[in-house]
Image (cartoon, rainbow, N blue to C red; front, side, top):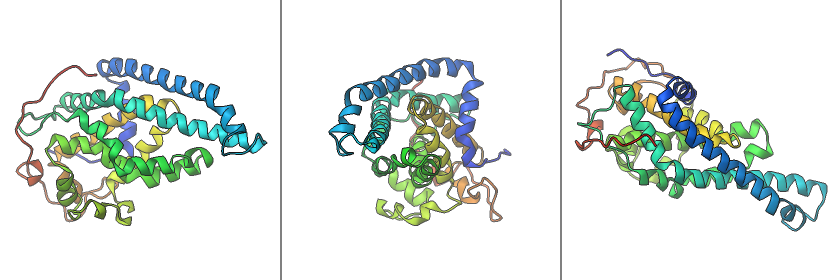
Length: 287
């Protein structure tokens, strides 16, 4: 089957357009996103009412000087983003797994003979990943340095965000973390080897996907409430294109911008990348 892997930078944007053009999915996501927006706005208002003045006058930012209010304002935005992400991470966990599977089924790429339904617990496990801590440390860049800081955040966190989103696809295929590192990324068995400058090379497709997805995620209010869901659809669309070319192994024959390398060889469905347990998928409702 002829297929094309697009530049991974584009898949998060494609997730938005796909969501808008598929009413059955959009209706469910809209209600959940609306609730997420309500949560985000409530958190922001609550923090401004109860903590803004305290942080500006009695906090670590000074004793009421003009710059204290600016720093307190930024602090409240950062705190609101973190709280919103944490709350919606739990609330969106099942919805994101259902969205991923629903997109694969809609595109007729779901194969219950070698795919199994992803675990909701895996979405919650993100709290314990290194990417979460790196994201927390670099999040203030988005508010301290408008535009430039946002781009820096996307660059620094891109590889981790991209890998986190595509982890659902790897789990569907039955690839645990060790197999992902050894067989997908050609890395060693130690997770520590994943944290190297090599993950930031231009051709790292997961970093490119994560760059766009990360920038969308940190847009105030809409990021945690809506774009995390559309990013999930984007990752599912990328997975569909990988499926057309033989699965994750296809990325070894394609550079980071989606162009085929000269040494391309067609991947077959008998590849060891498809060592998933033959488990019948759960259907269930979307969210």
